[in-house]
Image (tube, rainbow over all chains, first blue to last red; front, side):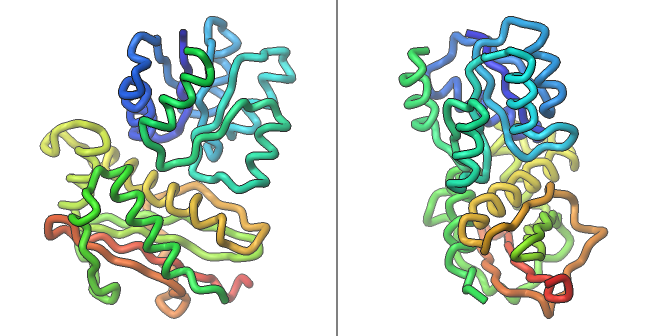
Length: 120
Length: 148
């Protein structure tokens, strides 16, 4: 599986990637993007199976990224990894087509459960 | 106004533990009035039903140790930008979690270094401070009453 990790923080991208590895998903290929715009370009180029995206980013936010993907007919599996997880945001994410929302700070167990649910 | 001291301290402890890898007992409470000199300050502004700023300030030693831990690198090889990146993520996570107890609607901005925007001490509504291996960190919540 090829996973795209999108976050404007380099440190957070490193932590997400390390946590994915700790969750036992060591065999997956992981690529990175710094914001929704870069993420969109990466998905449009093809080959991405799962997107893990921050919400609050410069250039293009995570929800704008997701909506742009769906508008372009790209139905890649998509979830948020974000510090905000109010019921309103969860509802907005779901309505836009997100499969899940993992709240920061997260643990490896959150990702283990996720990959089990995704069958990855 | 609601009291934010307890949720602020709880989320700070959780971030220290989960994000920075600090054992629960290793973070000892510190007087919040004690200043944190000569280190790093990052800020995240929010606006709406509650308008203000969340500020994280810490010593260089804390920033260095936290960054090395979170990025899995040696403290000797760190740059200023990497330490600011980690601290900005710290304030981002804290604000994102606190938003759940803020009045709605409140919108969060993006984190940034705090040297340009100094909130007034008179606007302080909550704060917590800890020491980890002798290195201080303080997280403060300001309510900008002039904007309310």
